[in-house]
Amino acid sequence: MTEEKCPQLVDYFVVAGLTGRAAALDEEGQQRAGRPVEPVTELAVIARGLGEEVPEGFTCIERTQSGLPAELSAGLINNPHMYLCYKRGHDKPPILDLGVLYEGKEPVKPGWHVIETTPYSRSASLSSGGAPGTHRTFLTYRRAPDSQALNTLGVTDISVLLPSKGESAPHTFCKVDKNLNTGMWGPALYLCYKRAVAKANALVYEAGLLSRYPEADAESFPLPESVPIFCLPMGVTVESWPLNTKYQLPVFSTFVLTSACGDKVYGGAIQFYEAFPRECLTEKQCLRLGLVSVVDRRPIGTRTVQVKKSVCVLSHWPFFDVFQKFLTFVYRYSISGPHVLPLEKHISSFMHNVPFPSPQRPRILVQLSPYDNLLLCQPVSSPLPLSGASFVKLLQNLGPENACTLLLAVLTEHKLLLHSLRPDVLTSVSEALVSMTFPLRWQCPYIPLCPLRLADVLCAPMPFIVGVHSSYFDLYDPPHDVICVDLDTNTIFQSEDKKPLSGRSLPRKHSKTLLSSLGHLHRQLEKIYSPGAEEATLEFLLTDYDVIYGRQKQLELEIQEAFLRFMSCLLRGYRSFLLPITQAPSERTTDCSSLFNLHGAAPPSPLCVSLSPSVCGSRLSPRPGPRLPEVPGVRPLSLA
Image (cartoon, rainbow, N blue to C red; front, side, top):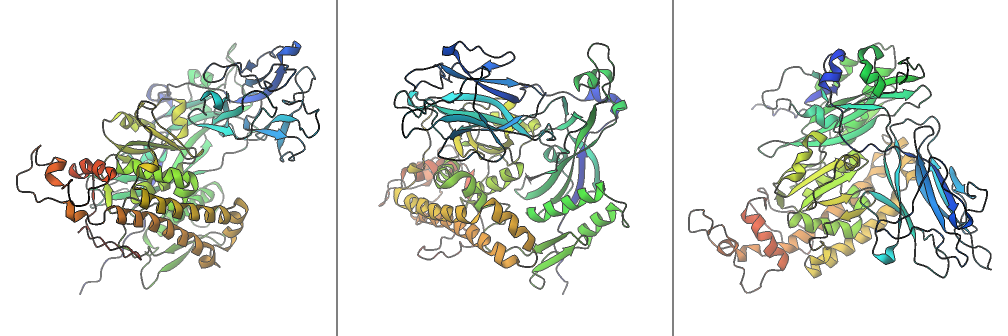
């Protein structure tokens, strides 16, 4: 009897970045067309009613989104007509966050600045603060450190909202949930702002393959040509930084590639910067990057040139945490040294010598260095399909109500565009979306982390689930028929032309049970996942694995079970509505009325009727495989 071959942990190791000779960069590279916006670096409050003018270089926010006056002091009896002004530029570190301070009710947060006076030395309080029991209201902001890297998040746009006039925060904006008008008169007034990558002096090019291991393609799985653009979905950037700029830490991202037969390949990548020689740039490129003077073309020696690069691993297994630790070790190893062993030795050893977890060895401790370890655990044996889904991240970022709304959007096959400033969250949440409809399977276009080069898929005349980095909206506007889901602000933006989706369209009894279960689990997540506790638990990764991650795995299973219960109840007794196929496939025989008994003893719910075209079209179709796992109180459903 031949021994069954153990699965391979990692199939390929890839390095992606800027390809081609440096002398040809100006001809081969194409700068992205977009709407470049400089970050906000200064804020000011002015009192126009007292004769104050907008400071030089500042822009005054005079109108709201719908064109109404944006006065900040409309609730005051003696209204000084106060307005918010901002200034853009790169002369200072960008502003990261905005806030509102109720003086006397809360302390000033560490690292935050309070706008106490106007540029003309008058009080910048937005309330009177003179009557007993009242408090003064000030605007606050938080600025990036002086040594902060330029390609970090910063405020790029600010707006004022009047909810009583039907205004809401624009797409990708964060709302400060504190009323600026604390007086007895006037409407409620809120501040909202947009954060984006505050880049300056950058050229963007399409990513290419720099190196790979192994160099030869495996017969069963050749290396996809599109891997480099998934490693760097927003492209390769050549940037110029001031000499005192803090070095940017690596950013981890994940992606999923789907083959024609439906098999998934999981990728984990980290993006980082390395020095780029100036002599490889043309004069025109140096001028764009601010490396030479505009007047006399003299070199500016106070800036350095950096180029973005990425290292990636591909696997048929979604061990994203393991990939992140290994790639981080590879990056740190490459920039330090000297070392006894070359870096290539560590890569080949990890790919060929680390065994895959098995029932005999369910946990494997890999010692990468005296200070770097990672733990491999055998995937849980379950009839549920293995994926890179994280139901915990789904519930954390969406909440119970929005999670139910997106469940309805997936079941009724809408166009979903997920976006976030955290690329690793996109894949985890996207995988959870397509997994929570088990035993049904999503067969339309599915790209959890979509590169800019493939963004045309958003214009496809069919349903899809696509994830993009939020900076996509700085370059393009999505089609009007797409439902945009902001994972950073937990908001869903839908077209006004169509009836908005709501979780209330789901079967009332079962959806109420699902919403109650998710609400209970969401409250548990809020208690468990605090930033301080999360950082503290990292120290005990190897010594106390079960205690630290046991509750996380339990919550993951409980959230997944809640969706499984709902789907089991939704599809219970579906066989009684099936009609035998007696004719060859045609337009008539694939109609809902020819395949389903829609007028049986128990009429189906409106949701089931809306699902029928999808099932008939084989886009949202039952997964072949074993019987569903037993859930207490729910009769198992076989879809084999």
